[in-house]
Length: 128
Image (cartoon, rainbow, N blue to C red):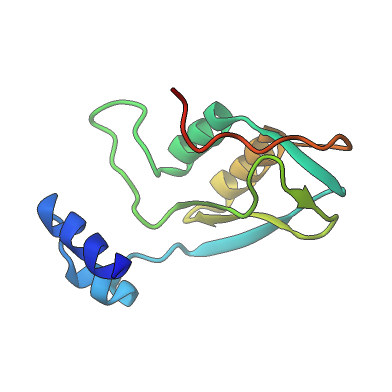
């Protein structure tokens, strides 16, 4: 099964598969906020750099090698480029441990999502 293959992959990279078997062991963020689409339309673009920089600001990544990583924080992106979204529908979810960082991340990632009226073809799964 796909789950078993994932377990093998985690183990092959030296990961602790007990976290795969029991996700309740994983760190949880203090704040979880679902950010809703401000308007209806088609998701025409997501600025990956903007989302990445917001992730680093939350603590999910490093600006420099010595920075600590907070494994409880990050984003869940609910839509792919090309998909139709309706106003008020969940666009992304933020997991944060600091309210100020949460507010900054909300603004950054919301501005990274461009919703337009034109139908946009989905991005390819692979680039050659």
